Image (cartoon, rainbow, N blue to C red; front, top):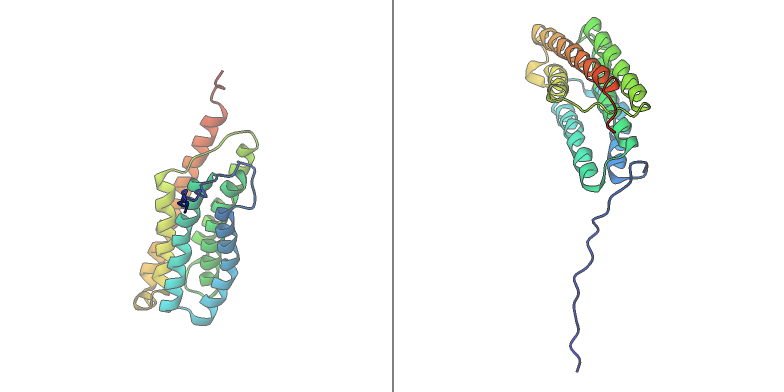
Length: 197
C-alpha cells in the first residue's frame, strides 16, 4: 500500500500591481465611502448616542484596515487616491451634519472642508507629475483630533458641553490648516527636486 504524500498547500500571498483597481484594500475603502451617507442618516436619527459613537469609531478604525491590507497585497495608485478620499468623506459628512443641526460653528468646518478638498486636488495634480507626497505623523494626529471634535458632540455625557465642542473644532481646524501647509511645502520641494539619474 503506497503512502500518500501531503504537500503543503500553496499560500495565497499575491500582490497587485500599481494600476490595479479591484483589490481587497479598495473594496474596504469603497465600503467606507458608501458608509458616509449612512452615518449621516444615523446622526440625524439618533444624534448623541452610543451607537453613533461605536459606528464612528469603527469607521475611523477601518482606515487602518485598508492600509494594512494594501501593505500586504501591494499599494495601488487608485488606493492612494481613494483612501484619503474616504477619510475626508466620513469626517466632513459628519461635521457638516453637526453644523446643520447647530452643534458646531460653520466657519471652522468650512475652513477644514476647503483645506481637505483643496489638498485632495493638489495631491492629484502633483501625482500626475510623478510626485508622491507621503503622509506625515502630524496628518494622522490631525485626523484623530478631527474625530475627537466630532466625538465631543455625539458622546452622550459631552453632548451639552458646547464650549468644549467649539474649542475642539477650532483646535482641529488649526491643526488641519497647519498640516495643509506642511503638504504644500513638501510638494513644492518634491516638484523642484532634481531627478535622480
